[in-house]
Image (cartoon, rainbow, N blue to C red; front, side, top):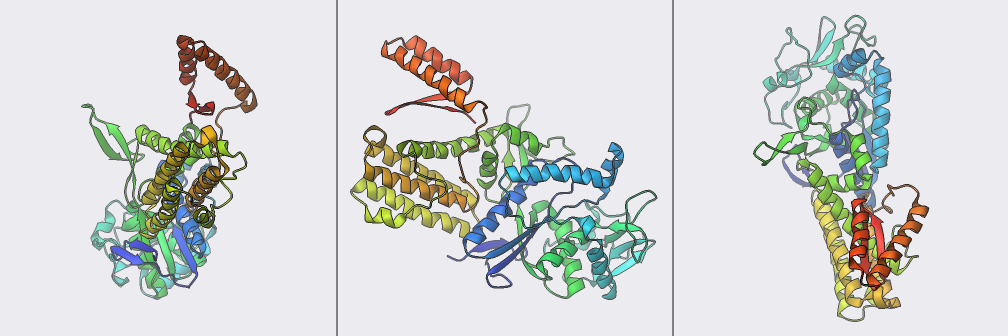
Length: 503
């Protein structure tokens, strides 16, 4: 099945065909680094990192660029409030953002270009617009004349007059058209700026992305991504200025991810959704979330919703997603107990080996689950990168493996053949997850003193087993209850009790 992606430009799913066969260029609008990152800043990077991993799996050579906006009115205001330079502020916030991305497994980004490092390219593009009669200066400010931009509004299907609403533009009392937007802004006395043909100033927001994307990906590239809130005016203006400057199509596919919403309870106890924003004071700092939950859980949570749908953030939704991921890891732990040398995370499952060794209905059912799951998984990703559907396959395969282990009583009586079938299925489970950056290794241990903790837990388990043997169930239950209060769970299995600390 060919990869199909929903293109905001055409408003329909299209078969993906890159500009250059075998190669893909992706540009994603990154953060404006004036405040610490929140959970919404993680959505786009996680989605497009996963998309790059999948495209690489399909054999493409992919270049993924996410920009950093490090010059903006908001940075100027915040840096003044904190009495530090704009550059210091940008470096500080960027460092926290990069640290969070590393923890989330966003490790396939090729470039994080900064706007301040591309002033020459920005000025060059503005001059091209001027040569094409699509840029004009007013007292040190430079505007894009949208009346000279062919098909303005084709992405958002909004009128140019709407430009003035909700945008980051200057007052522009001398603009030719209400929708004309700033390409260059005159710097006030004492503000950061650069010399230009129009005087000392700084770039507008929209021109930064056009200049950086075309520098690294070419005048026409494959995929441009970002949040739904960027369709207008930001992405609309990128198209207008880029295509007017170059005379070529800008990006062939526009992918927009849903926004992050907070799920809160009203005074009457009913659940309600509200947009996550600084103005509403409901921002969830990414650093705090990553200190509360394992990063793998956050990545799993973000990919468990189709990228075009809004992500409803709440403690309940994170916990539900974490429980689902933990169920898969419990399956992998069962497999590791069957064979300590199973190498589940670095070796791909051998489906051919499984098919040649089928012996009975249970083997056939497990093999069918693996083979059909493999097909369904890739079909989901080919259908507009439906990671939610793909993750549902991971859950189904995990359940199939557990049923097989139980039916064959592998934990009670073992058997080399049954262990082999189960282990190969587990390897396929992790291999599929890794296609989009999941199940790449054991969950990080959150507790310290692992060796001593393990020894102490063996003592508690032995004491509890002895109490149960002597039918002192009150003591056995008390031990279990005390451990549960410490978020330590004991599971009684046919081959003995095991323990784990809840993540």
